[in-house]
Length: 279
Image 1 (tube, rainbow, N blue to C red):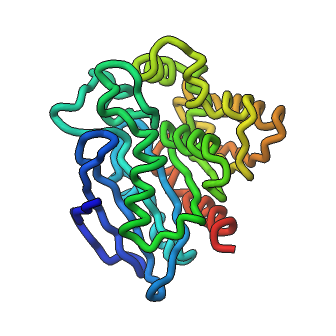
Image 2: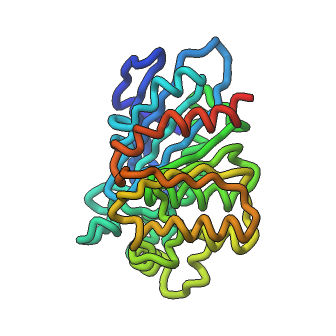
């Protein structure tokens, strides 16, 4: 697969790159970022995926996530995909919470979204193959995290792919699209009205249905304006406790939904992943 380098910058003893390729899954050009710390020739490094939230591209965490120093310290590659297909011919919606910038990491089945909105297959299959081909990535040592809609993506992708990810975490995730307005709008639009089909894209439902990961780390700000209506962290805590799914869910006093919050706890998350990926 051909890969175009959009930019490349030296940072924190490594290289921060932004790359573009033509995606077979979305039928569009897709852009993503990768930070690769310095390493010995021939060495393979563990990988941490970061899935972003509504309205975001790869650039939000790349520019504001403050992860490079910590990834360099732990010898970890950091990958940030886009959140949806892009382009003039890609269908869109007037709302910020559907269409471009809001792919919800699903494979759409409804028109007009079905042709391009295949972010599940893009993140689960196409982009990992590209990463393995072009970067010094040890695909046997992968972790995944994300924010908000991306936290939903990280949790559900890990739960649907047992054994692929040694470590799973999230910042203020949408824990149950079945139980919130964002999820109701997005999953109805992309998947149709049959809510039984939504369970594959709902972390609480997946755990209720028997899916498991080795452990979870979740940070959620108590001053997050989306907490009560959209994120509903308590549902994940209750589901994990009932199902016996190990989880550390931390309510962080006074923090909101922004990258000020994410960047504050990024070092904790990277160290937590490193403990499971570099041992």
